Length: 162
Image (cartoon, rainbow, N blue to C red; front, side, top):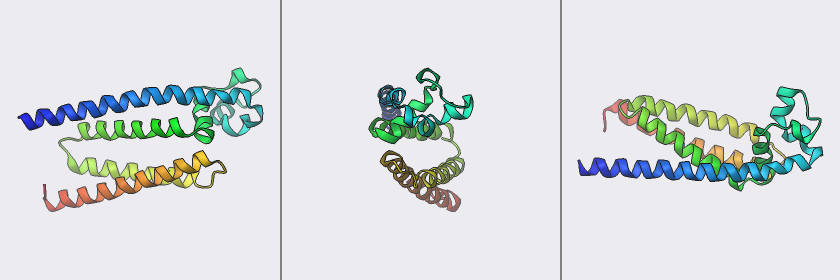
């Protein structure tokens, strides 16, 4: 009983710690990305969602907030990387809570997330900016870790090893 309580406490600390890091890094990512408003020549390349949804950027006021994250990831990737890692930890923690009773479903979830990260890594690998190349490598490493963990836990569950 004591061990379960200690484990639950560690999981809660990890979750709320990651949530705090996510909130702070999101704030700083938006702040760094807001420089996009001052760099009009970058609007066609970094204001992707604005161009896609609104058909283009005419003035700085047209830029959607999500495009600030893209600009920050491209040119000031520290806080977006912290934001990704903390959101990744939150996602894995939530998945482990949701699939606590079904280890095979959790393993399949890890495999699907790992493949998704490989795809995202492939999309960003040819980026001309160092920030998106860093993200590509982070996605690749996280994808490898998830696939390896998913396959090993799936093999253990299929063999009946606990």
